[in-house]
Amino acid sequence: MKINLSDEFSEPKKKTRLEKSEAEELKEIAGALPELFSALNDAIPKLISGLIGSVYSPEAAGNMAAGIGKFYSNLIAEGIPEEVALDMTKKFVGALDFSKLMSMVSDETSIEISGKKKRKRRGSDNYDDDEDDEEFE
Amino acid sequence: MGTARSIASITGSAIGGGSKLLFKLWWSLRQGRNDVKKGAKEFYKTLRENGIPQEDAKQISIAFVKPAWELLSIRGIMRMVRELDEDNEIPMMPFGF
Image (cartoon, rainbow over all chains, first blue to last red; front, side):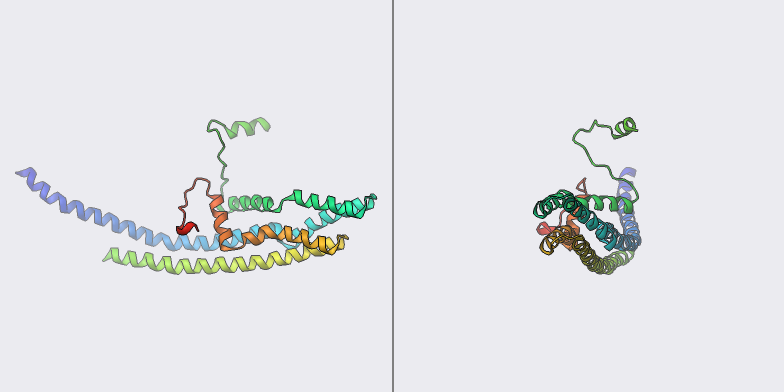
């Protein structure tokens, strides 16, 4: 009889406890959400401007173009015909692969923003990066 | 009562914060495109100064600008985020967006 009474009382108690914990959880989320949005509002413009600034700022673009131009003018100065030099320059630019450069920079920028270095997963799980790094040092 | 207030607060924060985030994203994409334009102009000018013919300089500049132009769109940003998400922790949006 005693056991039955305690069972009857424990059910509503459990329910109210569960409701309380859910309410607390919702309160926590409501408190954390503005912080999350403000962090995102700061991080996203930084990510985009860092990404573009590192490759496409007038200085960086000018330097890259100067390198390409120098390559071309050196070929001309060495006596290579203009058409061949132009073809070689185009092949040189093609080998630069700007899209790869962008993905490289985007990886770097995301690391800077998150504040930690993300490691890429390799094919085998047993492969130990640390050991490999130490070997090269 | 507390729960209802929390839900209202979450909804308000999501709408307000989301709109602000979207606006900031749009604004930074716009600024990024302007920066890319400036960089491309400088790139083209330097190529021309070094004696590369006009048409070829134009083609090289387009090849230089294309990846950034593709990235500087909402879809480009989404693609970049998906590439960064190596562990597939971010769920796919509906309609394959």
